[in-house]
Length: 114
Image 1 (cartoon, rainbow, N blue to C red):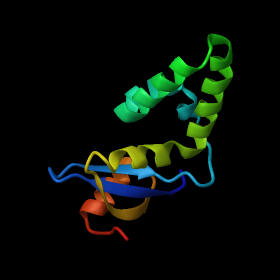
Image 2 (cartoon, rainbow, N blue to C red):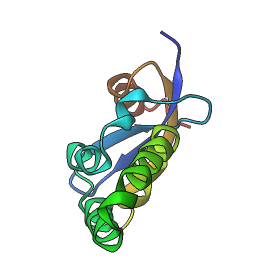
Image 3 (cartoon, helix red, strand yellow):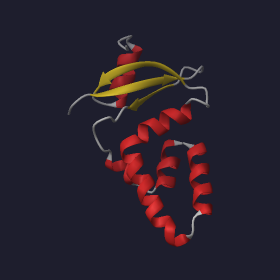
Image 4 (cartoon, rainbow, N blue to C red):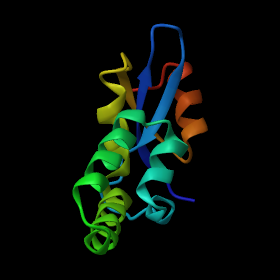
C-alpha cells in the first residue's frame, strides 16, 4: 500500500480528522450517489445543496447531473470535505504523509506533521 498526503483538521474539543488529498487518483467509493456520500461523511451543507440542486432539475435531466457530480467527487471528494469543515470550526493543523487516515492521525499526535 502506498502513502498518501492527508490534511489533518482539529476542532477545539480535541477531535481530529485526517482527510486524503487526491491529486493523482480516483476514489471509487466516491462514485456512490452524491446524497448518500454526503450523509456517509456527515456533510449536511453539501447534502442541502444537492437536494436544492435536484429540485431545480427535471427528473430526466437529473440522472446525468448526478452522474457528473459523482465523477467530480471521485477526484475532488477530499476538497469538498475540507471545504465544509471550515465553517464548522475545524481548523487545519498540518499535513502528514501516511498509508491510512488512522496512520495520519497517529503521526499527527506524535508531532510528525508538517
